[in-house]
Image (cartoon, rainbow, N blue to C red; front, top):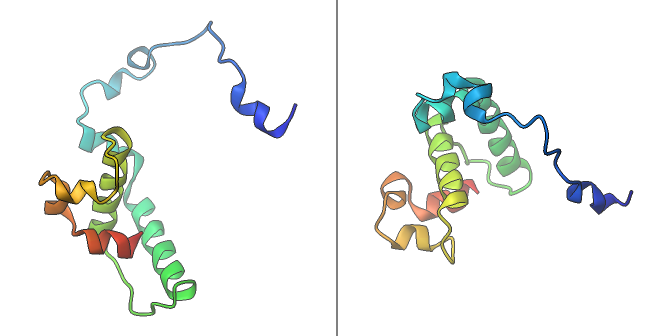
Length: 112
């Protein structure tokens, strides 16, 4: 099997269980509840550490720091951009939707 062939394997058609049957406890959770279940406090502490380490070491910005709240907002914007696709990343700030109210484009770029 070539390296790229692993991505083209057909999924098994039998034994597929609907998510609602496999995890009924998730049905009544809000999107925020699910987000917090995936990204817990320890995740954001680790992200914060890694983002700051990268900025200090690789980008030569020793004054860069961020908070867990900013990380949550950053990942929220990333997730939003995954299911609400716009032609350009800059468009998320020009639509007047929620993104510019959550974080400025410049701060998003700094974190990115």
